[in-house]
Image (cartoon, rainbow, N blue to C red; front, top):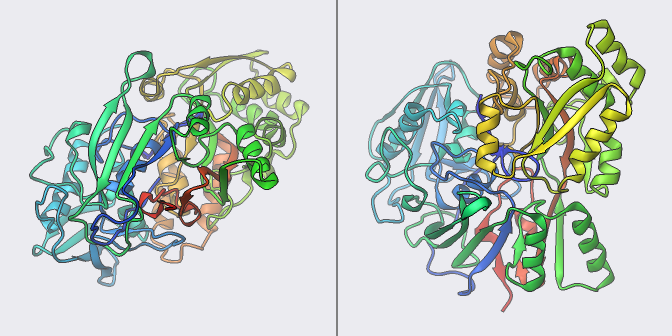
Length: 534
């Protein structure tokens, strides 16, 4: 995200997100693993699966397992490793040339050869389409790309970009078949062809008020795939649910075998963990670190939320500890910066600036700016792990100060919700961010440069024109000076307020294996790691 969603997010829960990053890796499959399909449930609904227009958690969940990129993030890795490429490296003293050599014998699932020409086509196509909901902005530092041969591709950059390998390892780097995909428009979901470990066999779409995206996607092992890891199953099904309660019912009935990260209501997740410890459940819980984060985003072009004083007052009143305790049963942790804990360069800029919730300080922000009280503001959301509880809690906290009058509105259709924030229709809205790649840049460039993935209209020239160009040149990604400055600026101007950082939480039936191996900060769920006990 600036365009990023995979969402982020974008994705499910009370926000977007944008979807997850990374690539699949699986050795040539000869039908590995159990023959019965493993079914996963998720509330990360999505609409578009074409890599040029897909940028939310639900779409990248599928793309990470059906398409190859040049590089990938294997389980537990924080540095990209070869996938479709056998080697990649920067060349030249100025680090503006990136050279990759592809594996030999690569094929798409339809049998077409995958060559350097397909890589060139994929990048140029994404840049040409430049879909407002797509991830083209992640590849904005690529000036041109050329195929030196069938197996060598060279990227020429308009500026040094040390983060390029991580971007190419995300679903934004998905390689598409130039014989199948049109060069200037998106391809229908049911026509997609990739070269990842799985191929799409069928898609059932939602109907009526449920939405218009996929309801069920059936996948099977791609016999043409070349890679490093063996699949632990030969068939995998993804089912998309609009409500966490419906997903939990499906898990209880055995209609699904597992859930993806944090699709369950937090109180349900906590109870499942307690039941497992007590030995009273046939559902097992896998937990781990997560770099998924949640925000309240402000439309900075709106007459009300365009006022920085209003946004600072919200930041001053928000009680994250209460939300973590009362809404999420401590299954998340409070977040005090746009860059989460566990990512290089993280600081606590919002706590450093605002400290504990304080009504008098919030009132001073508003009265000094001569803002009429109470501030009337609408908070819009689409889907949330906690249902309406999280939004109701934020409303209660703001109104208890006497400074705000908040109207909470739900837009249940995920596609309409995305259209709404892109059109500037909302004043404040709940959004979730799932990382594209494991780097602090993925929480700055996609979220706060040029309006970001959530199209909130905010841009700070010091960040976009000075600090981001400076930071992406740093090959030492642990160097946090520039990122610290950027986080401090965000805390001062408040184009969004960080609320909480997820902990990874997966639930699966007792005969399912491999979930623990796919729990890491990358946000990638690796279908090929999941198996079933005989």
